[in-house]
Length: 259
Ligand SMILES: O=C(O)CCC(=O)C(=O)O
Image (cartoon, rainbow, N blue to C red):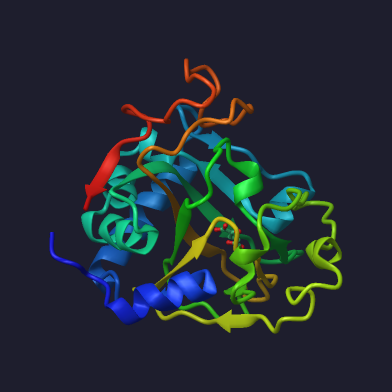
């Protein structure tokens, strides 16, 4: 496949740790994906993990289902979407890009809590950084219903302690006295069909959902081919025979695009 991003977009991502891509999917594609995700969220068994059913403080932050692609073939089509995978490859600069996991990230209305500032990479069982997420809303998002915010360049702060999303520490306390403590965040409203990418080290957050409908998002996490397992428990690797310091590979982490 020919390149789908411009050099300017790739440079922006490398500099800032995030990128806004307009019209990445057609309206029809987003509608199809939204209907698949509605079905996936309804299913009560299977291999995906719905880790925030109707109770608990985390549910007020995110109603989240991980690995929907392993149960729902329609979700699989989008989690492995060739164009989005190709974008992830180009942004990563790697020779190949693999799926790490997908997750439905719904922010429910009423008693909704913001997603606190955090990095993703500390949660992932990987030695090398470089993994990145595509964040795809099923409708327009803005500050009223929980769009994303990013601290530009914060992926250069390195790996910090993982934040407890339900009882959050303040990530800016971890970078006191550095340029990252006071850098102004960028708020990124999106139109339906658009998406953002962010590096696993980028500080990001979302406001609460003040609308009266769920904010429905699919996030797809990609990792460069050759990324090695750090041996820590994670729901995507638990029960598998991955060897510490060996590459994460195989059918659960399929290679989606090659340079
Ligand atoms: O959807 C949200 O509110 C937060 C998303 C997020 O943290 C992520 O995709 O890494």
